[in-house]
Image 1 (cartoon, rainbow, N blue to C red):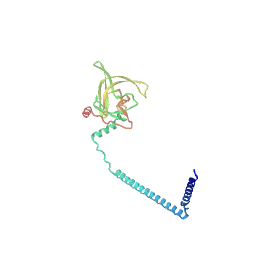
Image 2 (image 1 turned 90 degrees about the vertical axis):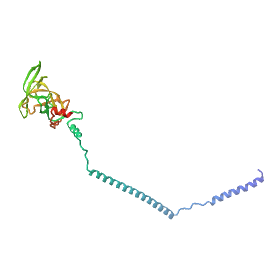
Image 3 (image 1 turned 180 degrees about the vertical axis):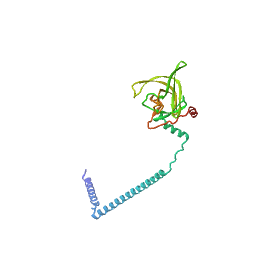
Length: 258
């Protein structure tokens, strides 16, 4: 570089440095905040904060009032429903029949029987009061003047049955099924009893049932139903009596089923 060029560039660089220094020195400096200005700013901020909190409290209060009003209206509606008269559905004859049947039967179709029941014996065409005894294995029938005889080469038995309110005894003749040996709890001897099969009706139930024959004239009930009869068709509620009611006569039962 020659001396002429250096003499021209050096003044230019010196002028630029002086210009930059002057620009830095001329920028305005931030002024310090005075105490009154600081107090005014804090007061303004506190005012805005209090105003915001007041607005939020008012909104919450309005929401609470609206909720309480809706809750009070729901309570009034519930009271109206409670005080409203209940309209019971009309009970038809079929509905009443089903309800009555449910009281007399279990869900699986077994009869509910009480401590005593009324039974119908086809062979004498009459009703008898029967005692339900789950402690007895077999069913028994009160019989007097028991006589075994032969008819057409087969064993038969004849006996008399007493009936409450009837002076004359009811005479029965029927085939002899077999003999069973019964040991009474109050006696040591084993008693040999004839067994007959008679059609008996209890409630809606009707079928041939085996009875042992014995003199029950000293007993209150002339018919006793034991476990062998009850186990498949009935359950016992000893707190009740005559649950099944008076059985229908065979003709009436057939007409009812139709």
